[in-house]
Image 1 (tube, helix red, strand yellow):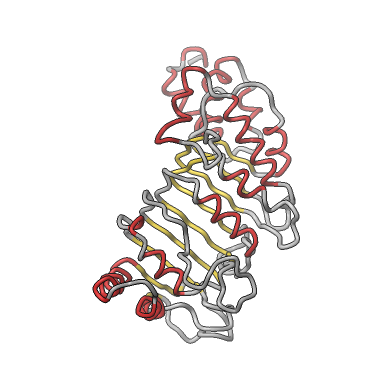
Image 2: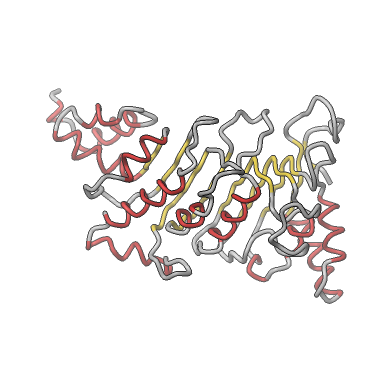
Length: 321
């Protein structure tokens, strides 16, 4: 059967497969006009960047996109992240906003999609990052500038290293700007953060927040939170977050290989958060009892990655009560 006679529905499925994880999508779209017409909306609906050069070239493009993106992901191998990656991401999201056709402008205002500065945000089903940040990066402020241009339902930021390699991809100063950006998201339902170090540590090394500040700002739409391979995470911040009325519909907080201090100390256990709830200020006795019960119902602490030595390497894998 000639390509020109293939039903559009079938051609869409073929091109979805051909474009999946293809580093040279342009080669597929250049086959003929029909491939371009059918394949370009598929490509633009799920934007994927596997190198900093791809992201830069896209951000500098001037032609309108075939459709408003539904998802965006950046996956950069360890050590290849550019100091200005979030500056380029901001430019890429600005291009997405410029590409919204007149008939699609209502999508920019779904659920009041505008950040604190009144700037319209791009609604996304998912926003995924797999890259390192750097402590000495002078451009970390672009994390807020870029991420506040989007309004995703699902957000993932993971390190690019293998799971068994315990590394810090999100440094404390980057975490600070990330949390600021989270506060602008009104549609977020699922958050996954791994390989990070928090700025709200009890050692006083990186403390823009008070000791009993909530882990995240109020996010009424949030349903699940996954934090893995994290250090400098005070149990009190998790308890304070669950005490906020905005988190009444949060159904699961999963803490995997998380540490109150460094990885050479014990992993966080659920009883650590229960004890923090017992001493959290500003609560009446009945509120405190309700909070402790909520911690037991919502929070799970787990061991996943084994260490050869140090800390609590003797713990068995699974739940840590």
